[in-house]
Image (cartoon, rainbow, N blue to C red; front, side, top):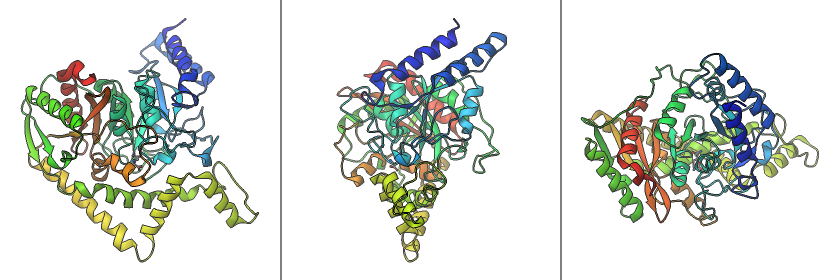
Length: 464
Ligand code: GLN
């Protein structure tokens, strides 16, 4: 039997293992064995003839808000239970063309709203490194799948930190590309001006290679950018480079273990030849407030389409149209989604639009300006902790605002549209700590260069 078919069969055995199903870590939502095996046979046939792509036979896990043809796309929501997309996302087509084979859809916070994957209608995903802890969110199933070894690559989506934060909590690499770098066609919209699809992997090179495969202008997404896509290049040192350390990301309240790992990473950057420069991104403290106006505003509009008519589940209520809408939405959406819709319609309503939504857009320009100033003043990349703490216990964070603060260090990159990633930089009490690298718009090459050198310089220290 061929290698690729064997690889995919073994990935499918893992996907179907009860350990990863709803009674276990609850990572996998759906899979389609026949379709994955048929894909594997096609890739093997191509490989037998010629070269079938850089990811030939690599099993791929997909967050359940990215449209696929062979499995449902539910966004972790009751309202889309069983929903079958009639088309597939551009990223899936591109990865398949490169030889990757989707083997499962992964659990997530409903409609990508959350930081722990506890807001899923399928129940929470557990962190493979410690099942009493969350994997982070909202792409927690995808991150956990890579950390558990189900597949070497997974797709997630980001609006405010949903790839980087779970990557940090699960001890793997997670990338949020520049806004516009990767097509959003086939990604169920949360907040369209902030959303990006990105990759999880075990190491920087795999993450970079897969990111570049998914990147590029797509005629089906008007916001995708027509910017040349570079290839991945190896790097050995950071000579001549300046890494900015923004003081706002190292507050006194920062967990001392996280701080210590960050300091060690900064030393590693220095030893690789980089100059370290303290910088200020003064409007960072407004990021969460800004995010929680812009994101719910867009979500309230994007989620209006789930009305019981066009997609998924319908609940008839007492029989008239309004009652059908109301009952479908009340029963179909979970609490966090309903909270965001209410928040979003409120900040967009006549009388509050100027006070909240318009104000938030002004603050967004200030945050963007902070980053432009830093890069203009000679910083090549920025280093920060990805999260203020390591993975917390399941059920430990019950206050929504406290949950929102998980993204204090990540949401700024979405608001500014710049590329950012998280990579493992060590552990505290056995749990992984993520270091974040941020670069200028479309400067993924610099981001991956810094990450590559940091990864080799830290070596095994990144995982202990
Ligand atoms: N945690 C943030 C939220 O709940 C970000 C989510 C995301 O990036 N999709 O909205």
